[in-house]
Length: 157
Image 1 (tube, rainbow, N blue to C red):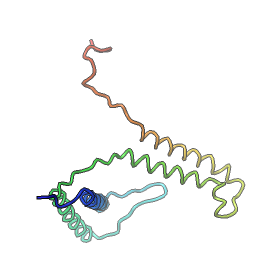
Image 2 (image 1 turned 180 degrees about the horizontal axis):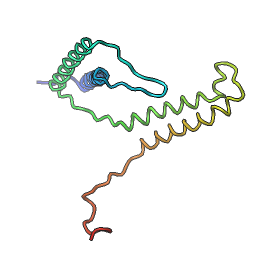
Image 3 (image 1 turned 135 degrees about the horizontal axis):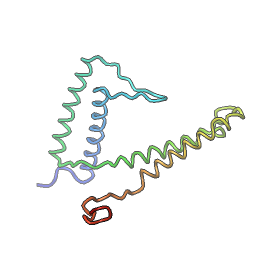
């Protein structure tokens, strides 16, 4: 019997279900109380306990459906390296930070001359930190193999 899906159809199905699962898992974390209080933002969820429970039940049912389809169509998990996401997000943030220095803010209207001194050094520093984080996240890391260590190396007596 020929496969039910060609390669492109298989990939499309896997991608759609993967995005659904990611969204379901994120919603599940939020519904279970994972809220963030940052410096400039906070997340909130204003749903009753009954509504949360109903949504969590729907999420569980949807995840069962994803699991069933993954098994039926032999869809395998794909590793999503978070270091790539970190690098991408920080690269985007670098560009946004560079675009909010005083000279770039002129596109929104006149800029106070003091802004260059009060804003630009900190924005430049934050932009460089974002770039450093992106770079560090992209660099391949040497994995330390404990088993490769000699039992008679320095410090072992």
